[in-house]
Image (cartoon, rainbow, N blue to C red; front, top):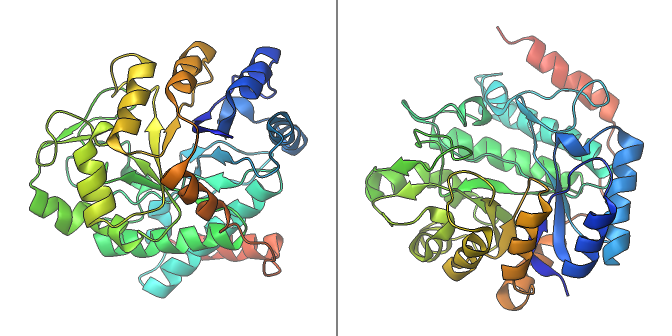
Length: 337
C-alpha cells in the first residue's frame, strides 16, 4: 500500500539509494523538476523505472508545467508555452480567452503524456492584488476572480482532455501575500469577508476538480498562528467548508522556507490539519526520510480521494493534432499588441 507522500529525486535517473528509498517507503508519487529533465527518451525511462520499482503502473508522476517562467520541460526539446496572464490578455472575448487557455493546456498535456507524466500542478487560481508579491504575477490568468476562475477551468479541462490530471493551487490563495513562501512565511491580514468575496472565489468555482495544493500562507482572520497548510481551521472551515473542495488535498513543498520545525514535525502537522498528501520536492534523501517516516499509509477517505482522482484520467480521448493545434495557438498569440 502506498504511503501518503510524493517525493522528488536528485537528477535525470534514480540513483541506487533513491531506488532503495522508493522501494522501501512506497511513495504515492514522484514530482519532477528541471534537474530531472533531459529529453523524451530519458523522461520515459525515468517515469517507467519509478513505476517498475513500485510495481504500480498507475503510480502518479507530477510536474509543474504552467507556461511562462514556470516550465520544467523547456526548449529546445519542448516548445515554450505562454504565461497564464498572456492567455487572459490575448483577447477581449471571454470565449476566445477560454479557447486559448484550453488549447495551451491540451498541448501541454500532449507533451506530458508522451513521457509518462500524469499530473500537472496547474491551474494557478491565485488572484493577484496590488502590492502582492510577484511570485504569482503573470502566473495568474487575470486580475479579477471571474476571469481567473473561468480560464483556470478551461486549462484544467484542457489537461484532462489529454489524459493529465490538474492540481489547482495555492488554496485558499497566495495572490495577496506580500512575501514569497519559497523564502519566508507570508502573513495576510485581510478580513475573512474580503477573502471570501475575492480570493476564495476562483477555488470555490472549481471545487469539483480532483486535486488541489495548499498555500504556505498565514491568514490572520482565519488562524493567526499557523499557515494554511498546517491549519485545521483553514482546512476544515475554508478549504473543505466554504470552498467545498472534497478532492485530494496535497501540501505545497515541505522544503520551502515558509515552514519551520523538523521535516517530521511539518509532516505530522499537515496530516493533523486534515491534508491528505505530503509533498517533498528537492530530492534531499535525509529530508525525505523524515517525511516518509511521518507519512501514514494512504487509507480511508484520503485513499478514496486518490482513487477517485486517478479514475478521472481519460481512457479513450478525442483525436488531437498537436502540430495544427500549436499553429492555432501561436497564430492567436501573434495578434497580441
